[in-house]
Length: 366
Image 1: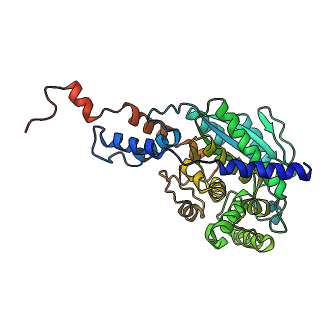
Image 2: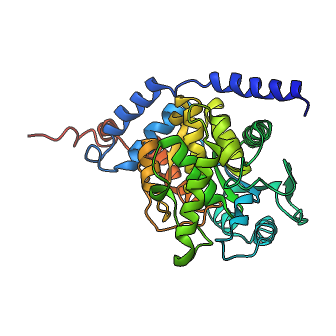
Image 3: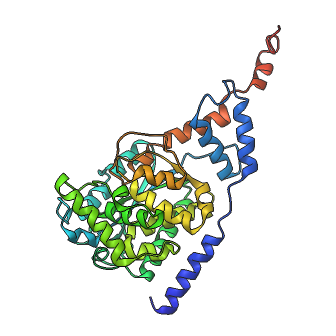
């Protein structure tokens, strides 16, 4: 891209972000009133009722057709791997990407098990994964730079990552997907996520840096130091999301941010997965707080930073399963719960129905 194209892309993203509108509060209120009239004690279905009401607000209707769901999995290497705390060899990113494309990775297997589609997008995996069913939208073939030594990417590349995520999500929506989630593959991305979260929340790196997939007890302290050094070296501006992503983020975080912004623009629910998705959710919400209206939390990751980050997001995930794989595995598990919530709203009998079905017995006589 030349400088003019770069400025145009950033301007396009900023304009789209400004177009996000709040969810339909009237439909949400109507749904809550409808749920109170169902044949059950008020509030007895707990968070299932909250999901139904929120989705009614998102779609602007009480008749929810959410049968089509999808998981977009973004893959990229991260230069912070060079710091040496990771126990897995670097080619794991490419190998897992190829396994995922074959439908055998965790994000693909769980998506299929709940009837969801999945798509694999290569943003910069070293070795160029060659399996079929991979879409190549490569920003930089070698992945990002080492955040402990300098910026992860240029501002223009951060814009490119967000744009890719937005366009991938919109393509899914154009194909009929009604509920979306995001996954990721890439060694080092729990470190970049911790750096993004610390930058945006002001928390100390020790509060939000977890073991990830590649730490041992011996190297965990080194990883935390690496995250702290990345923040010191780059000094990301928390008021500028592009600055944060470009300096201490990853291509996957940028693309996932784009997906979440596109979901808000298209008035579709986006289910937030683990710690990398949480970092992206923070970026999207800081870009426009109304993006929060379209997000549904799924599970409390086993990563150390999950609790503090959900607190910053103002979310409380319903599932607690100790999962920390990423790839959209935990968020896909929320899909059947959303189906149940939609069914309760549209199909469960109300007290008014009792008067129709049992006119001689309703209302009960004293």
